Image (cartoon, rainbow over all chains, first blue to last red):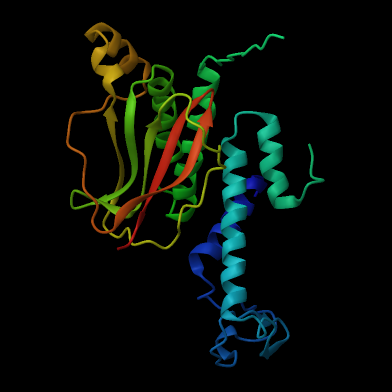
Length: 103
Length: 171
């Protein structure tokens, strides 16, 4: 992967589209199918403990804020990709990486 | 003591048209990012080039882009209306396209309506504008919405002119 802006945009688009319906788990130390059942709005499993949802404290409201932030970041990246001046491009990237970002 | 008033008018140039069009293209790119790669980059580029031409010649009244199903616009659509010159509204950043709307069985398309400037041009002038566009439109009638209503949200302004955007809200 050499197109970092598009890769980053895809991550944010995935978060916005998936709505955290997909559990995030890793198969290095256990079978992801063995993760404990939970009704938590966000499920991100500890890579070495299939009983520990590291995002268990995230509420529905927290989840919605993360999705909103992912949409805003996606807006900024796509805006940067289509901007017609360097100044505008940098301004949009600063919405993602902060005001000190420059090129 | 004398008083003076200064009137400063900025000519609308192709640079202004490109700036507005780039924001429309960003909205279309947001659809691509959020709706399985549709529309394609080539389609976005073509729509962007077309709206540049119609803006610089001040010929567009409304243009709608979005997913259409059964002859009607789905919720995943945006409509732009040309704003009158000199209008005072903020220039917004593009985006705020909603994800996860139902576009099953829909295809991405566009509908453009001309303003009175278009019809006051000679056929040769209209042909020249059309020939500068990367594709030619065919005639048709504006598709209705499947459900909901259009509501204004963002404005894209440059050089004293611009486009006001509407998106679909559910009733």
